[in-house]
Image (cartoon, rainbow, N blue to C red; front, top):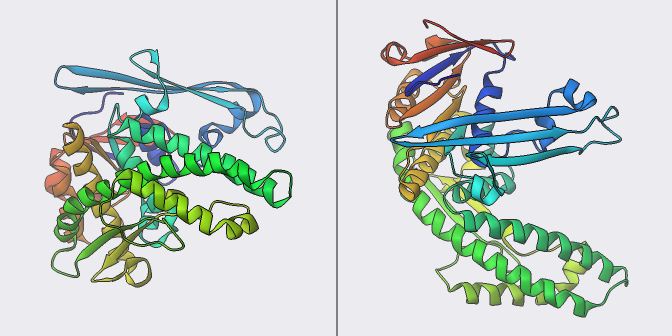
Length: 373
């Protein structure tokens, strides 16, 4: 289907496919779903059982440049999903050429906000780390490659820690993996710190614009370079690596006891405060939702500044839990972007001036149609 510039309102009842449509758009940006934990959760049940092929594809145009992004899923017949849960192979293409994930991510930029994004504020630290990683990866392919290498190092090192604990390997074998974790981890910490500094420049005014006069937003990056998360001053990457190495050696007994790596960027925290207090503890649901939306708008500004391209905004049912004033502020903010996809169960949530200027789609049982709004 052809999606128009400006605001497109996608209206439909619950369970008809609105979120699925925005999920597909987001897949073309970061090659991962904002909701599904593994790729097989994206595939229709009947296709999982019988096997076959599924595809998400889209064209993005800006000025004279056109990008065709495509994701193919080859599904082996699984029958018993419990016995064979992972037989889904994914391949990525840009303009028809098979492309690694690090070069695919960010080819098209989509910033997605959904109701579940409140977990950025009230959820576990992993939610905020994922937010940071997607933010940076859309603008820096080298960061995603480092992140992939780091994930493999942590997996191998954890496996070796358990072997040492069970006396099936020696302490000396950890030295290589300590060095690798320190090197890759330091690069991640440095890049995250710089990204949060830049993000804060956009997040504070975005929150003020959405919330109006009230308690100020704070965002602070606390890496895990020793036995606790703490803020750091800018340091050379080599010094960060030395600190990680020192921490791993000093905490060896704890790591062996737990069988996992207890320091490094996989344990980092992004602390969000409102009026100086932890937002996850003290913010109301409405305040938490406003903070999450401000972080997404800040993400869009971050991506635009880094790439020179305005991202597509994909806003999934963001208006239903906001009052009229905040709805209008969100819609006014969306006007800064070339294209915004907004889902809703009821178009009355969209102010009349915005409805009049928008394109309108309806969706029912996964079928999308043009409508008059």
